Length: 271
Ligand SMILES: C[S@@+](CC[C@H](N)C(=O)[O-])C[C@H]1O[C@@H](n2cnc3c(N)ncnc32)[C@H](O)[C@@H]1O
Image (tube, helix red, strand yellow):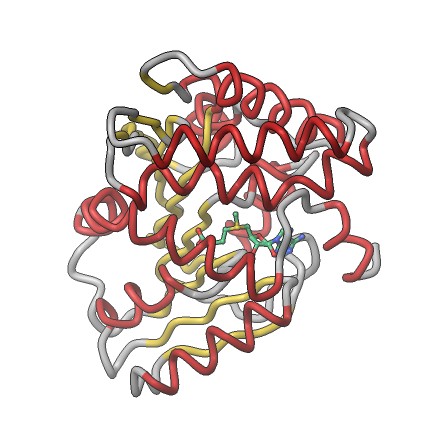
């Protein structure tokens, strides 16, 4: 599939807007992702791949961990996000991280890695197994695969809000219509094990609360999937506008809480 065509099957709006949404999600998830990466320290001197890296938030975290004698390569289809990631790497003075435009479905730009990290990418793909097979091919013996992905069944809010419930239905239906799996999180252990990794294990993270950042992730994601919902014909543009406004109003109230979806973290080693 051509890259532009592949990017069109991705349901979340990319580019600059997509990059700032990802930056927000990365801030919210930083404690959980850092705790996950801590399990695999020391990473100093290693070659790490951030697969479907978006704006490179985790690539930067990995770059700090592998240090100046290690190297991080992030790759993604979205050239706009990659350009922002390169600029940010430059501003941060990071010489050990590089970003390439490549599809996770094509042969990967680098092999011999000690660590392959994949967050929120497999959920969008009809055949996540193909990406895990590529991960195996890219890893050196003893290398570790780390995956984080969503399970939308677990997303909730308080007090009850019909717009948040409708958002969840729309996200699930739109992702399924494009061939993705909005509940992939619970399958990760099985997928990683079936791909031939050893010592497979997992844990669960779920940011939840009243903070503006946590609550904003839902309204921003709703806005970011609006176009995909409308083109899939799953809801009218009027309903999408209405739900987007209602979620924003709900999130802006001081007495409301919203969660992210459940996020499964899974890992395994190359034998
Ligand atoms: C939800 S974002 C996650 C980005 C990043 N992993 C993070 O957690 O911040 C998913 C990313 O996958 C990228 N993507 C989707 N399909 C892809 C493909 N076939 N090849 C490479 N990247 C892809 C999108 O452009 C997007 O940046």
